Image (cartoon, rainbow, N blue to C red):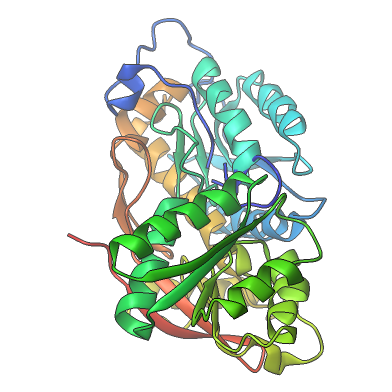
Length: 399
């Protein structure tokens, strides 16, 4: 999921971009003969590092992830820890900057007590960290870095689905559920997340037989003026606008400006809409939808309701959001991997024997990681009603 940073999945770069060998790409065991750093054998605790964006434009994402990390760690420790050892969380703020993220990850990699890392948050920072994970052989799980350009499956994995997948699902939803004919797309060319999702949507829409009447863009994903592009979209007769930007831009700028030029159709975005900042006139946001990773209204998954109950109890009845859920699942994925690797787990054994090809059942869905370290999972669609996101539907992955 990602803002202008080169970090969400790299378009958030919300999934880390990695340089991997063919062996890494295969999802098979990577050579661990060159490094013995990072082991739980001689420690009474297991240290997990986290690298997240806790300040800057995308701070809401990182803070939510950290809340999920902490809840999971607290639950795990209350139940005896991992392999009988308490878990310690070592948190680092990358400020949404690739260099800061790299420095933070390198610091964690240099600490032999750290067995794994959860994060980074956005795609640009994840892309910067992914090759470092391979180099240091320190396994990392990015909760929300969705960019396709991030190569995963070496020592970087992700909990979230990829950007292209969101764009494809949005096109499928527009064609099959909303049954619109004329669609438009607006994205920021300077941002991997925005452009990656937008281009995937356009390609999938054309493949689905939709008429892409306008394909507009901005130079970045954090502009404040989009009226000229939106006027063209309105004049083209679009019934559906796909605008993959972040919550801090889509809410106060793109959606109100679309309505101000007379556009009355659907507006849809990816998971970057979570926590959408809105103006006082909530009626502007009717017919706004977005894809995301879980819904609190999903009563079919007992883990969802247990997670919400636990989070509310620990956080003064506050509601967890998608990034909290992804962060929570990321820690439990790491827990499952370390448990499987055993009491003498090393960074290499955690990666080789446990994370690669992992099957996992979590709050954000049940899935198996593919050879590139990414899950193919169900996608939840939410729709805003009077400014509040409500569950619309769940779209299952194609078998």
